[in-house]
Image (cartoon, each protein chain N blue to C red):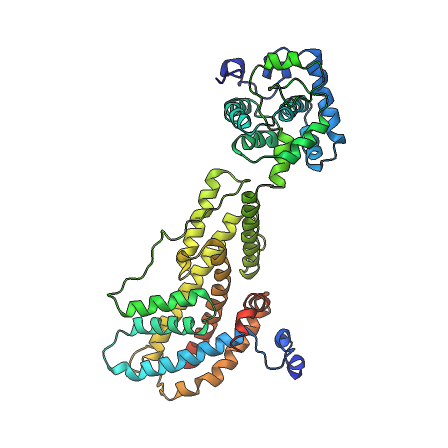
Length: 304
Length: 162
């Protein structure tokens, strides 16, 4: 059911740096398709959808890439137009998955965005109705359709589709990118919101922890946080051990002289002064107090 | 309003002159809890007690009681009270809430690392394993602050008594 049109033997992975369209796409491309490809390339910048333009621009970085991706995009755009049925989309998703992955493997020098998006498009099951309509407007020069219905392609492409003769990937890479940036699905929106909250908190933590501002990357920042907390806890442990030594009175402790227990009662007065001095010294270093006020204020108000 | 002029560090909270910055609040509570407890410990020194454990215990207890606004202090109290009764088992299950750190932009193995680190972080925070990621990240922030304040307080106590 899934004709492996793109099979390993047809590619030469030994030299990935130079691919021409004919090498990668083993099917003869007639003028109609070729012109379709070029037209697709030319029409994308004029599209109003920013993401598609960006994707096209990104794809246009390499000349060999441009044709490929435009061809890919054009083809998929046409296919996208033609597909209205959800179930058939699923079918083509699954069947195009293999093809996409194989295609990706042998085009290592292609635009990374394309690669990721292709795979992403296969795994994503979001419906991009908005994007489909946009796509429909841009690729009026499309090839034939996979299905008899919903056919928007102008003439000249039917030969190419027959030559392609396989379920075309239903999602244009351009539109996958758009979809990723603007998640239309409720779940992915919620997921995105959650992720943003988490990264917000991570940046807030970065402000607290000294020396974390320069670090980029969640993993490293988390490392720093873990180390910092561990060192703080060790400090507390150490201090409490010292306190135990101090507290146990004159009978133990090597360096402590006579320590009248009555002094403990007068501690708080001096203690607070010391503590505030130390705190101020610390606060001059960083923005700690602001943070604490910011985060804690709501709850601390209850106690003051 | 006088406070604004006197100490600009406290200016943030001195719009209403009765407000005290939370770091002060915490420190005051902490020292006022810990010092009498230590005094009591000192008095009871002659009775046979395991001093080290109790001092640590008091330290932790003071921390938890001084920061009762936070979720982690509840868990800390639970742990402390349960450690007094070794028969009761604390729910320290690490199979609490799994962290799903699914990021579309990173590779799969990187997600695993981050998840691991978050789990480790959860272990550090008292009660962290029962929280979800967002909550935990927020709690970690104020836990760190309280730890810092605690170390300052402890240092001062030790200093003053040596």
